[in-house]
Image (cartoon, one colour):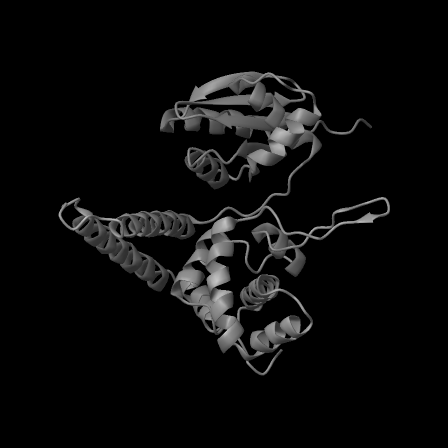
Length: 314
């Protein structure tokens, strides 16, 4: 008996339209990135019954597409563009158009079969938007404050009103973040588990909830690689290179690094762990990144077990 045909779909997302390609038939078509276009796309894909629908993270333009297809029960996967660009180079694809990109994504879906992950629900998507907006405001305020340090006293360059406005906007976003967590039972519970760990404050907890919805569903190795704190080997032949961390989610690492600074002082287990690494000759930053990874693994375990941190358990 012949094996069933595996149908894989690639979608290249642009601001105005979506280019779709199907493997193994090679069919391609285009729809506008609008509500009507998404409804037509959803119906056509449901008729095809694909095993994978792959699209790249495209600066936020893909969010509505992913949400619509996931709500319809379709197996949609959002992947890192670096993966698909490397895959295209491996295929020898040098030309680039939206249709060719969709064909590469379809081929990637058929050959690589990236794992399906549960899509974040509406509250988590709102949390992600607020978390990103908070980072933007913090960055802009820090830039204005830095410029203000070089201000000339006899010139009124308007730094103070801008800083005040950004501070007010930041406070408003913080209130919305807190309200969203408090009014969503699952988020409220997960935030309580995370914040029971000494070192994890409201900002770190909100960042983890927004940017790592996979917490509690991955192994310790998977969650470390996902965030980018898993050291990878660099060996070849007789050469043994230094293991390095790379890739992952930079915004999560930034929030957890600050949390690790606090945890290395206040959390008894992490404090002892940090001191052991320093006594063994590890540089301070290497020891802190190790604490960061241990903190992330602990957060993952608490969300998996749905429990608060127990200081009596190492």
